[in-house]
Length: 284
Image (tube, rainbow, N blue to C red; front, side, top):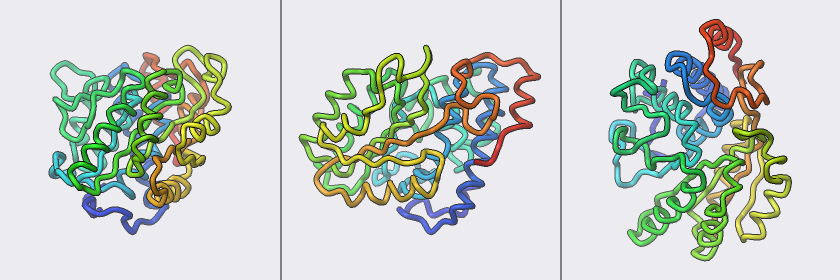
């Protein structure tokens, strides 16, 4: 799928419909690998597909043949439970094969339930402890500045993750240091493990909160690849401040009976339900 892409360049000349096709392929692969593993996080993996597609196939500079390339951009998946989406994207770029993708959560597999950089090249951090990704992204962004590199750093967080105090400590630090080569993205799907994010901790004023912390704030439809591409372009033009992209998404997007349903956060599904998901998965 990704063999004809110049991953070593930013802002590739790509057709949006082609990217939508890739997102559809990634979404189908998520259903396949989770069905095979019989465990894992469905809803939050399906909600982040278009974000990953725009980052890896349009914006980021990286190299599937050399994941440790020193001049690569970095993507930190702070919401590490969405690992199935990351692995499906990796399979569609050539970091791993589709056969290996199907070993998710199996004994001896490199594909852990949460990404492990010590096992799988291309993974930047062991995402999963909520809130940790933004702090780690600041370290990487500062290191790039000290090394005189034009590396850009991206971090994907969940909206439930905004409950964590560490996120806001990191937000202050990023603004203090003027990290304009750092872009954070919130996958704002409205649900977390125990229910609606707005009920567990109010999230209706996220944009105002981040503006108060002196970040450049962009709000987009998180399932519109065109909108995400535009936001990523705009983030590069924000001088002197970090950018947060608040991407409104739907948990379980692309599998109609899972959409917006908290019970599909991380269920164990029977073979019949998995087959139904495969048959109903949609091109968004």
